[in-house]
Amino acid sequence: MSPLPNEDINGEQHLVNFKFFFEQWIVEQDRYLQELLTASREDYEDEQFQPLISRVLKHYESYYENKSRAANLNIVSMLSPHWTSTLEDAFLWIGGWRPSLAFHLLYSKAGIQLESQLKNLLNGMITADLGDLSASQLSQVDELQRRMISEERDITEKMAKQQETVADSEMVELAHVVTEMRREGQDVVEDLVESKLKPKKEGLEEVLERADDLRLRTLRGVIVILRPLQAAHYLIAAAELHLRVHEWGMKMDAVENGDDIV
Image 1 (cartoon, rainbow, N blue to C red):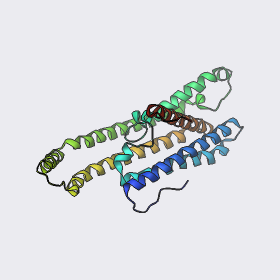
Image 2 (cartoon, rainbow, N blue to C red):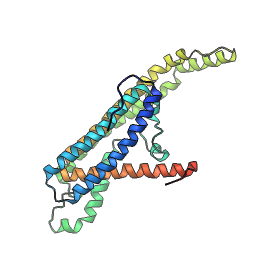
Image 3 (tube, rainbow, N blue to C red):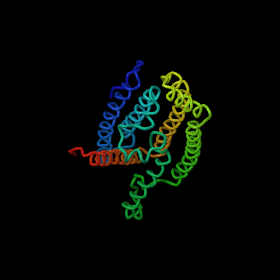
Image 4 (cartoon, helix red, strand yellow):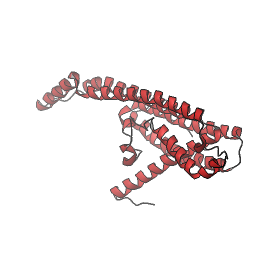
């Protein structure tokens, strides 16, 4: 997949490029999902899974690298992306998925696989999937979850403080000045508005950068704890959930907009 261009282009064009990148990224995610499904059904040794797992993680990394470049030019649009559905937007946390969801996903999939393999486990068979998490793994997951949730809360507070700056004295005064200029028939000086908004945007960009960093570190942290086959099952669950929610949301939006659904 081609990354977004590094050259300095206007924010609007960069967003067009990111939308195109995202659509390509979704297609590749589905391709990786099919590869993971095929590999998980084969009698692979652990070391055979590693190259595929590494490629999938690189795929996620490329998403955040390109997102960071796009956010540098238009942070506001990256926090309210128009290439996702309204269903997805309803569950957004600072422009993406909430890191703590990574653990809910793990426990949900582990519970489903444990239930389906319960008879085999009672007979002493090792399933090697997420239903067979060891006590040591569960302890490591719990420790990681505590750390990540603490960071998530800190970032949430930082975002709340950043949002509150929209009503600080500078913004209130600016709103009044612009209102008076319009009342008197004067042209609003856009440079003045932009100069006041710039630090707000920079603050939002910093929060998004921290949020995306936590998302990626959480994913990596979970994968490190899991055995290769377990990691494959986890990445399958993550891709299935993301792709299906995106698909359902896009169809819902198409119905709402009266578009033809293929």
